[in-house]
Length: 146
Image 1 (cartoon, helix red, strand yellow):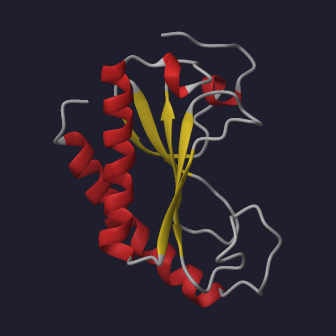
Image 2: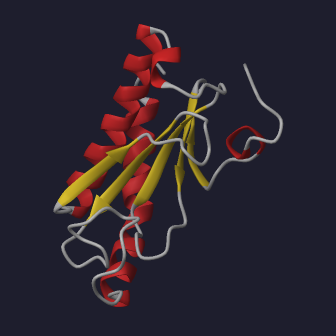
C-alpha cells in the first residue's frame, strides 16, 4: 500500500477508529460542535479521486453511502454534508457530517463562522446515540465484500 511519511492520514488513524477494512477505514472525528462527524479515509496515499480505479471509486463511494445512511436512519439530521477537499491534508478522505438546524453554523458550511451558541444538551444526546449508530455501521460495512 502506498504511504507517505509525514502524512497525518498515513502516519495516524485520523480520529477514533470505527471500522477498519482492507482499503479504507471509517473514523469518528473529534470536531467540536459536530458530534456526528465521520470520515472515510482511503488507506493508500492518493490525493485525488481520479487516482482510484473505477472499482475502488465504487467501493469507496459505497462505504460513504453506508456511513451516510446509518447517520440518517438513527439521527434524522436535516442534511448530510459530504466533502472530499484535501486542501490541508492531500490524502483522499471523505467527510460525512450529520447536520442539524440547531448546530452552530447551520445552514452554512461547518467551517463558516458560528451563527449561534452550541446546544450542549442536543450535542450530548447525539453523542449518546453514537455507539448504536457505529454498531450499525460496522454491521453494514462488515456484511459487504470490502
